[in-house]
Length: 166
Image 1 (cartoon, rainbow, N blue to C red):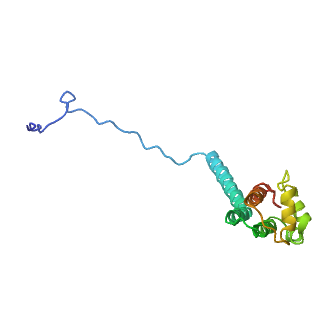
Image 2: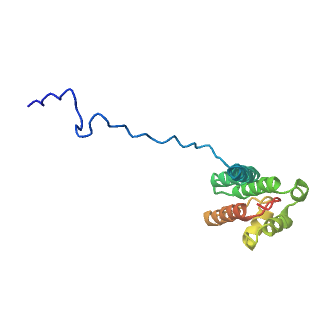
């Protein structure tokens, strides 16, 4: 079935020859017209720049935490794990606090320093004794004690306040 041909003159014949097209209005200028919007834009831009700078600074100051968490996650659970955990904690503390404050610490003062940097002590007495003495002894750890020490170390990495207050 085919459609009939359209006539040469097509449209509404009632409108006649005097029909005028609708005139569309002028395009609206999207450029801001008042100086107040420039001030609002400048304030918003300054706020976004400040927020970006603070996030970048926070990330840069705390990147050692992510690296230390990855090292702790890759540790094997054996007798040498305590020395490796202690090494990771020492490197993290050196990144977070002034070298003069951290480098000379070992034994019980070291564990006291770690616990003092959190709101609540992270290492209990057994873990504190392990960190203080296990570096100098060849004591083998069972998996539970090793896992608890790694969990406490990760908690310290997450909860401590560094020299910047982050």
